[in-house]
Structure formats: C-alpha cells, structure tokens
Length: 456
Ligand code: HEM
Picture (cartoon, rainbow, N blue to C red):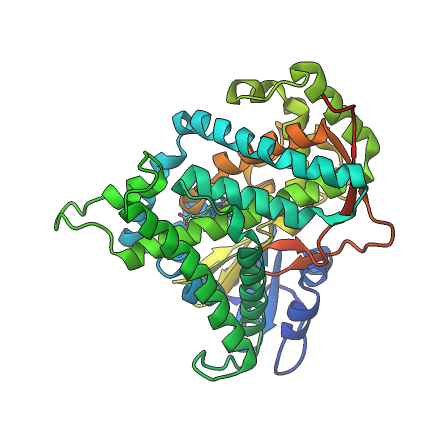
C-alpha cells in the first residue's frame, strides 16, 4: 500500500456518536445507501455501531471483491446470523468444504437438466390456472405475492427434490417471514442477545425453524423410504461419497443443503416475479407488448425450453425488473486482510457492502435510472456496460448456483401469466419495498385478475 493510499479515508456520514449509522440502516436502509452514493461517491464509509462498513458502487471495485481478490473476502457476521436456519449449506459454508459441496450441487443445474425442469414447471403453472381463473371470474382481490411464493415453492420442491410442497406453502411463507424479520432485527441490534434467552422474538424464531425443519426432514425421510426415486439434486447429494473416507453426507448436512436450496430458491424468484407484475401494472404499454410477443410467437401453446430464446422482450422485462428491484439487494463480505478499494485502504475486518439496488441505479451506467425501460437490455444498448453494473445474481465463484433455474422459472411464469391475465392493483393498496435479507413488498401485492381472452 502506498503511503498516500494508506492515509486516505473514504467520505461518509458520521451518524450517531455511539451507534453510527445503525439507526438509519435499520429504519430505511435503501435511502441510506442510495443517498450515500449520491452524496459521497463510489466508496462510502459508515461507522455501524462497533463495525466499520465501506459501500462499494463502482463495478471495478465489485470485481475485485467478488473475482480478482475474492480469496481475501468472506461472508460476514450478518450472513452468519442465518446459520441457525441454513447451517453449513451452500450459501454460508466456506473454503474447501464449500468448494466440494458446490461441485456436488452444480451439475443439477446444468443446461441439459433445464429441459426436463421446464416441462415440470409449465405443468405446475397449468395446474394453478383454474384457481386463478376462478379468482378472476369472481373479481376477488388476492395477494399476488403469496400466490407466486406458493407456485415457485411448488416448483422448487418438485424439480430439485421430487417433493410436493404445495400443502406446506402457507406454513413455509409464515415461517420464512418470521425468520427474515427476526434475523433482521437481531443483526441490526447494537447488543445482540444470546439466542438461548427466552425472549418472545427468540421463541418465535425457534418455532419457525422447527416448522421448516419438519418440512425439510420430511423431504429427506420420504427419499430414504424410496419415494420418488429420480435423478434430481437430492439424489445427487445423497449418492455423493467422500473421495477419502467413502462416507456419504450426514442427514444434518443434507438438511442444511436442502433448507438452503428451498429457501434461497423460492423466495428470491417469487419476489422477482412479484416486482415484475407490479412494474407491468404501472406500465401498460410494456404489459401489452409482452402479451403480444407471447401470443404472436406461441398462441395458446405451452412454452418449451426451445421457445425461450425467441421471447426476447419477456427476458428483457425480467432483467429490467431485477435491475430496479433486485431480490438480493445487498451482498456483503468482510476483509480478511488489508486491501485497497477505489483508492482507499480497507483495513482487515472491515465490512464491504455491494448493493445491486444502488449500483443498478448508478447514473454513470444507466440512463434515466428510475425509468422502467426493458429495451436498455438490447445488445445494442448494453454492450458498453461493465459486467458488474448489473449483478442480481452476484458474481465470481460465489455467484448464484440457481440463476439458470431462476431465469427459466421467471420467463415461463411471465410468458404464461402475462398472455392470460391483466393484474390490477387494488386501489389504495400501498406497494413499498422492505429490505430484509431479500427485497420484498412489505404489504404484499393485492390485485384483482382479469382474463385477457375468453376461456378456451
Ligand atoms: C431471482 C432469483 C434469485 C436471485 C436474485 C438470487 C440471488 C443470489 C445472489 C446475489 C447470490 C450470491 C450471494 C453472495 O455472493 O453473497 C446467490 C447465491 C445462491 N443462490 Fe441464488 N438467487 C436466485 C435464485 C436462486 C435459486 C432458484 C436457487 C436454487 C434453487 C438459488 C440458490 C442459491 C445458492 C445455493 C447460493 C449460494 C451459492 C454459493 O455460495 O455457492 N438461488 N443467489
């Protein structure tokens, strides 16, 4: 580190003398970080209680943390708070252990597997249509966000684990909300209290984990009993043997992997879809163009994997929605050793945060950043954009293992629902982003559905 670089301190808000910027991080994190970049630039320093945090908004610095110098960065204590739920699953494990587990899981998401998954996914969407048709016919308001969670959970269960999770949707949704809210609360408290204390929040969290555990162990037990023998991800994880010891994965490790994939896999994709329908409702011209593309290319036919490359506008709508509302709005790491980012020294132990929500609105890379404009993803308009100006799935070795599946689900759901329904937001229903571990609409998305064409 040069002498000059070693002395430089990034600009940033000082905040409260003891708590730093924790109160704002807690009450309105999106504004804190958006304003931070606007006021102070691409590297912003925030005291956060006992921690020091640097916010990075330049794609070059993001690349250094996630790719070029990735070995110097680990997942943070903030992420570690998810450990009671996710254990040593892929999202949280580190080092050689993570590498081995990732190698085991990755082939389940390969392109060749996606064709089979597409058929299962479209089948589940078709199964859900009568229920939505009935809601449309009655003009009955419903929470589209809850419906999409239920649908994507069912897809995740079926394609990865051969399990029918449709009856568990309500329990899972309730438990996931409790987990996200409680963990968010704990992460952002100045003095986190030990989980063993019998506080109401801790009790709620424990009960929610029990609910999720019983569902996940149910999936594993069913497979042990020989139900749904197939070549899915669960089968691959269960057949894996350690090269040295020849031992298989313990039930505990299986539980952690399955739990991670169920939770990381359905909540994010369902939120991405919810935000997409919200944006379409606000932009009727985009909604009409999407429905027109699907109807022109497919008519009423069920889409297949081979159809998807032709549904260009559908894909761009989904990309643009994840730009404005990236479900993983914040990616955090802690520096293991000193480094330099954006010309500023980063001391060992500093937390660095990369915010897709903020970078996706960076005016240096996005013209009229707040405008919903799917065509900004046309090749002619995106060629000059740096790789890490858009990173809804992260990047580098820890990039989302399920990104291909998420896009497959997203595009198929969008195509099949957008040509069939117009969703109208219930007048007066507030739509407001809530930034927990994921970015969700705080009050869900209450809509009524209208069929576009007469029933067949
Ligand atoms: C729109 C949907 C999704 C979004 C926006 C998303 C986003 C992300 C991001 C940003 C990361 C990197 C986190 C980090 O670097 O700290 C990640 C990791 C991960 N995601 Fe996703 N994800 C989505 C869907 C899925 C699906 C469908 C699955 C699986 C079924 C999945 C499983 C995982 C796992 C296991 C990891 C950890 C990978 C590792 O560290 O090796 N995600 N996801």
